[in-house]
Image (spheres, rainbow, N blue to C red):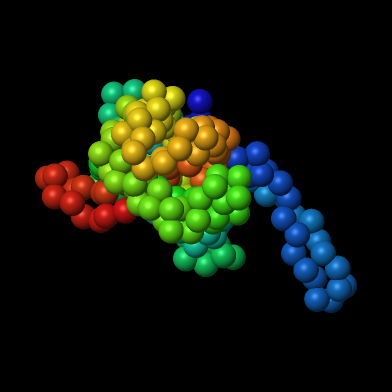
Length: 237
């Protein structure tokens, strides 16, 4: 389990990694060469807070929250750490790409909200139009199908889907309709499928495009906000 060192007086934290003792290289103008210098980030942190109480807290698995994609270098992330009896919210951020990440305990707590589901409308339309000859549907029928699908999805719940893949966005994932729910959708809109062969072609299309982030799958947005200890929201995701 991952651990974090926290100065309980300053609320500053240090997140150990395998790179903490790697040497650093300074460019020497006189010799026009790089000089290797020993480095130990953890030792520096402990020395900076040597007269303070430093606690080793464990990261709470699955507590990571962020409104930024993983590849964004300038960001704010939040996750929970614990001493076994009390949880703390740890903020991770930096404002300059040349700075190391900073970690600090904050007073706010992370509160998760109900996730919401969205159809990949544009991607679904493009794929259906590309397969229009196989599906025997014109552009108008494709648009109608997507609208029917959006209407159906607006009435389902999280227990009607299976999450099946992550996204570049840490607060988003992909989910597929459970088989019985997909069949319910087809059954509900049977009158729209004008012929049995069209119905079967659509059933095949839906099953063939329900892996990971395929177009029949749904985007699931997991929202959160930070709340002050009084319960009043202080920042939304």
